[in-house]
Image (cartoon, rainbow, N blue to C red; front, top):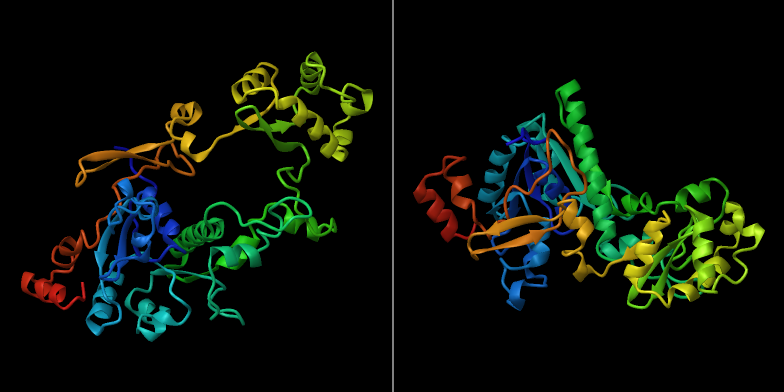
Length: 400
């Protein structure tokens, strides 16, 4: 098997939903990731949907997605023994990723200064709503709050209507990617200076940096961005409803072929006139352009529009509902989904693939998400050298 990109890294994952994707990204690229949960389990395990609608801590599909390629142990960090065990694990780690409220690790005797004394080469990555410093550091938040304060919600929705939150957990995901990048940068620096560092990630700042064109437009004097509905800010794309779903129009590509196609159905209105041949004119008058195309597209199916657009080399795109993605021919052809075995269930399941692919050090899911406390004995007895008697006592006391 090919060597993975991060196979020489050991990562301790102390995150909840805010930061779980960061550790997953490193695990799926080959890092040895150890997820550390409280004995009661990560709160993600209580969030559905659940496999077969059976609510159980080991059947949460949300937990499954965010915790691939990780081993899992339980540990009560609010006890002196639990804190001591974490310090021992830190001595053998390259990275610790955590998402506790600012100051929590210090209160537990596990702050960066302490961890650095144990392991000077350690990289500590902290993912919090507003960072470790500043007037908002102790405020509570959520993905929705971060999207709002980061500017993501303000620009999402139809003109003149209330704003909308983005689909999924885009604020948390933005922060997780920045955290992964910051962690890798700190590890790169460590190779030069032989010393780790503390990576401080604000979810709100990360979200503000991921609102595509909004900040550049403002800094270039182009004003404050407004809600545009499905009209892309470039004004060359807009989503429309057709007979059996949705399609994305495009005013780029072979404009003449598109207009002639619409003309054949006697739906072109004024689009065949000379001014529309100018791409800047099409941009300035995008609303009318797409209104005309919307009226035309409503008589076609998705398949008919896609086939016709591809034939004419016009970059149209279908808008697929989530339930259709598993059978999407393009994703199937690209091998996007990974089939992962769950031996305890006697089944395999398709998991979403990676956000990037390397040829010499490929991305892959190395193991299914851990059951609660699945690797306790393997880690505590096999790696830390705790005796069976000590392990039994720690389990009975609820420390592991």
